[in-house]
Amino acid sequence: MASSRALHDPHAPVTNLVLLRLLVSARLRSQLAYRGSFLSDVAGQVLLGLTEFVELYAIVHNVSSFGGMTFAQTLLVFGLASVAFALGDLLLGETDAMSETIRSGKLEVLLVRPLPVLLQLATSDFQLRRVGRLIFALAALAAALLFADITWDPGKVLLALITPLAGAAIFCALFLGAGAMQFWILDGRQFANAFTYGGRYVASMPGAALFFPIQIFFTFVIPATLVAYAPSLVILGLNGPAGIPAWTGWLGLPAAVVLSGLMLLLWRAAIKKYTGAGG
Image (cartoon, rainbow, N blue to C red; front, side):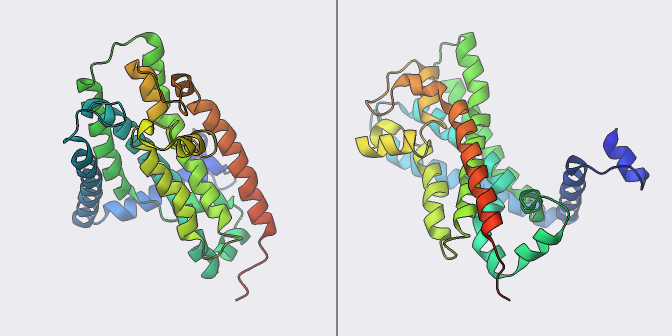
């Protein structure tokens, strides 16, 4: 109701939520104007997800178990991680290219507008084609839930519903932190990618296949294993390795809240520190 008043009454207050709706709808309309190009982009994203699945299949199909998991169980980890990453990339993937935004002087344009910089970045190049990756991820997750032979109870159902959202929040926080780091390390996009795309790679595989120090790092420092593997242990009724015990499967949501808070503080410090591109 408030958004419709803002659209028709020039004196009505315009909230950030209304502006977000207007900006995103404008981006979506422009992308849907060229249906053929849009569909080919979506197909490309689906193909990218399929390629990642084929990579997983090539690793797992020749062995009876991978990291103590069957193929169907490994597919559950892959599906949960892929859905979480696809959502995070859709929402805040643009912050990954912060160094280019700073060098081009585009950040100055964003700073003088009466809108939060993060909101503008999230909508500046909103790519609906990324939905293709999400579509494939949801299909992989549905197949895993069907074939993984899960004995359901209310707790597992709740965890299965929360896990993709908590994982998406973790990836959003990682993207935000990656963008913030590029204020200090201007050519640090590849360094930042080690935490975002590296985190995605770790999240999509059984954590028991990792060396113990890596298990600890990607559970309690960068919580990549909490995105999918640790919750999968609870859902499947499995025991985890020494570095990722099964009880960590319930830590995804708290980790997402803590990490998001820390990365927002880092982002605010980066914006406050910024003094201009020097152009």
